Image 1 (cartoon, rainbow over the protein chains, first blue to last red):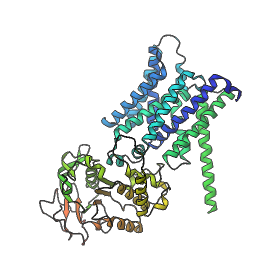
Image 2 (cartoon, one colour):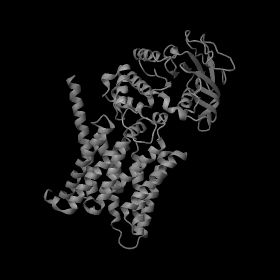
Image 3 (cartoon, chains in turn cyan, green):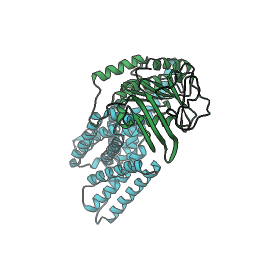
Image 4 (tube, each protein chain N blue to C red):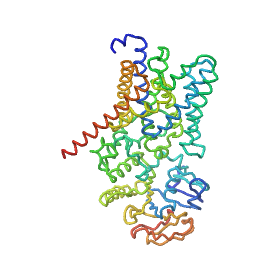
Length: 274
Length: 253
């Protein structure tokens, strides 16, 4: 594995994994504590419409996926506020419509479109060096946003009524949070793809949440968990010739299971000691 | 120029969706008073409190807090919601929750200043939770949670404190401790407290109103006050009374 780090594609993959861990640490934690997991899945699948549009128009699919994702997030935020409809119904609609548009756009694209498959299941080992600045910029923007607006986000996420009673811009915070999810989606699609992205948005944050007692420490711990599972999955992918996306998700799942067992065991021994 | 009244409701009709819960509600409350809000479940107590805090918008009529709309006055309103609304799975310490009261209404980034941290420490000491400041909120008892929420409401440095069933779900000892805390506030801040416990928190009130789809003020002897300048909405038959020592609503309502 160490030998492999001399290869450029492996260096790119490691850098992308670390940058993506920052993103999933920040946004994954917010998704989990706000109980917006379905929203994350909805935006991820909706952004596939942008992937398809990118292929059809000959544009960079990562950029069009980002634009599509942000558009889907804003539409979702506005519909949730102004349309009297069940939340999960709206998410389901955007989820399916985005995927359908993506499939149709890819089908309409002339020529070779096999690369579109990498957006479905991810392909960390094939991330080009040219995509890394975009990943870094997204990670920096999201990190800066959370550092600057941590306290309003905390109030909005934990007690919406209180945030309203303090005259905080709750609707705007909701829209920005959805846009942050959309930006994170674009980064994480590269790792695990549209289909598996919901796992990466939730499992590392849920693992970190087992051992942390504040949102800030949860975010920090999620970054660490993210680095462990993405590099672990990458290593397994390289060593055993497995697809990288599923390998990362299975690594995350294994770490969560081990953490749960460790927690249960330690609590059991604490209770036995009493 | 600020209004002499802390709270003024004039001909308010309000509810959820298209269904009115309160009709023709009129109310005035002078600064420094403590108003007990009693009444049956579903009668509109939480709707009334929501109107005061600005979480519920009236279908008709006006609500004024110190002469301003609740939305404009929000920065000076402390709100203690029902305990059930707190997400106990949220990763947050007692200090974090209390410090939430120091958040300012602004678009600009904000961090806790030294004065904010000192105020939070002082409030936690006042409610007897200073030693638990680093503990997760989920690890507190229900009574302790009510006290930390009270500390958060007071951290806003409110002119008006709105408390929604502060003693709900807590044991007698915790309720007594909470009452002592609240009684020390009376006079220094205007308080509106919704409660089922006539002998408990509501006994601190200097005036009261029963909410049952309308507002019916009560005088100190537990009798309905029919003064037209005070009352609004239909009389209630719930049997709720203010305790004997509560003063007449006179003048302020």
